[in-house]
Length: 335
Image (cartoon, rainbow, N blue to C red; front, side):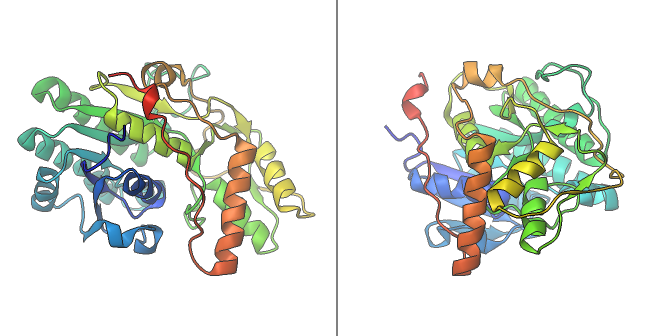
C-alpha cells in the first residue's frame, strides 16, 4: 500500500539539496507535490520531475502565501532554511527565515488543521556535547545564530503542539551529504568540498588537525527518515536524531574520498575555522529506530561512491544524473 498516493504535500525549500531529493521521492510515491522556494540557494533544475509538481517562487516569510499553500496541503515538510554562513553575516535574515518561517507554517497549520508538519532541524543545536553518542534529551549548547534559530523553531513546534494540538515531528539532521550538495558554502558540505577540490586538481583542505569527528548521513537515508516522519502514527510532538550512528574523523573522510577518486594527493591542513568548531559529534539513533523503524542503509563508503558516480555522470552529461531510488519500507510501519 502506498500511503503517499494522492496526498497533497507541501515542501518548503523543495529546490534545495535535501528538499529536491525529497520531492523526487514524493513524486515517485504518487503524492501531489507543491514546492515553495525563493531560490536563494535552491535551483529549479534540482527538481527532476518539475513538470509533475507545482512550483511556487516565494518565501516562507510571506505569511499570506504560506497560509494559502498550507490550506491546500495534507502534509507539510518544512526544509526552507538560511544556512550557517548567512547566520553569521546576517543574523536578522537568519532569524526571519529560520525561526519566522516555521512560525508561519505552524500558524497556518493551526488554522487549517492539517495532518502533519515535519520540521527539519539540525544536530547543530547540540554544539560541543558533554557525552557521546548524543541523545535527543541531552542539553543544548548553542554556538552560533544558525543553531539558535533552529532551536527557536523547535521550541515553536513544541509550543504549538502543546498549546494548539498541531501535529508536528522534529528531525535533527546530522551532516547530510550526497547528490546535489553544493560545495559553495565554506562552512558546511565538507564531502562536496573535498570532491570539488580533487576534481580541480587541488589537495583537500582540512581545517585544524583533522581529528574532529562528525556523523555523516547519506541524503537518501535522510529522505527515508523524513518520509517516515510524515506518515508514521503516534509520533506527534516527538523529536528524532537522524544520523548514521557512526563517528568519522575528517582525516578518515578525506582518505576515503582520495581512495574513491583514485587521486595521488595528500590532504593539506590549514588553520581552524572561525565558526562551527565542534570537536566531536555522533548521534544516538536508537529512538528513531524504535519508533519509526528507520535505520540508515547506506554506509559512508557506499554513499561517497554513489556521490562520486553522480558527479562523474553529471560532468559527462551536463545535467542531473538519475540514481536508482531505494523504496521506502512502508510495510515496516505499524498502524
